[in-house]
Image (cartoon, rainbow, N blue to C red; front, side, top):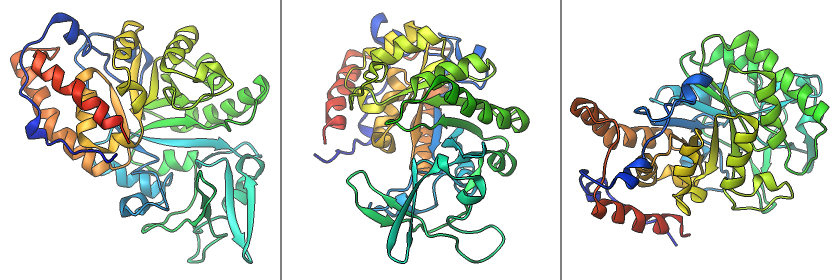
Length: 373
């Protein structure tokens, strides 16, 4: 079923509500430092985070915005920085010769003489990785890049604005220094990693971060449960978030199978927060109060985060930030319907917004409509 747009003008005005409902809206302020992330009950800033820069590429999408700029590149990160985003999220893997690079897929694909060639990224050296796509020092293209969709179809990786593949170090050096980095530690879901291998990879990433991050805000995140545990043990400067798809898929590793499992793992490892697929939160909004009671921050990702009304609702019920593809549209929406209200609350001396029963009823009726496809 298609999503029904809900105009901001249709959202009821805000006034009073019961104490229990208002408690859902108390949450920590997201910050680059661990201590700041752990503070609960203060007025909060709602974070907007660019997904893989200014948006991921979906090559079979009819929406040209999904093919505007090559994802996970310096060009895409700096394009996002022209809007009021707080962070960009991107995927980091480590090459065979221990260089952290930014690339989402586990395998990199190219066509050579109409033959498909597929190689695991972590089995390439840095110099081999950089032979793909546009080349830095010439007008020539390197090996052509193609991409395989989840259903196995192959698409030419053509975008309106292309850019070279890049390393984590280059991102630190060439991206607007005021822009925060949400560094997803990327591992293959189908591989069991020994502790020693995970530690080695994470140490290679931390080496670059420690040398080049300077004052840039940093968040680490990963779907790999042991990766977040180890990165938390290796450093205590930057917050670590555990990624979960909120129960939309079931894994052999039970730590990954629900938001509740994610909460337990965060508490066991001393992590700072959860990044959940948004439908996992909309299906069970009561989880937000459990997350807040556990002194954790909550961010979300997913296609619904490109719908302004879904973003607004998350702000109202206590989500701390959203990872989005449509950076321009969502930052404009946040500016239109969140920031003016936040300013009014400050002027009125109100820290925790309150809502009437009618307004809460409206929100609860809208949630099932948003998550139905």
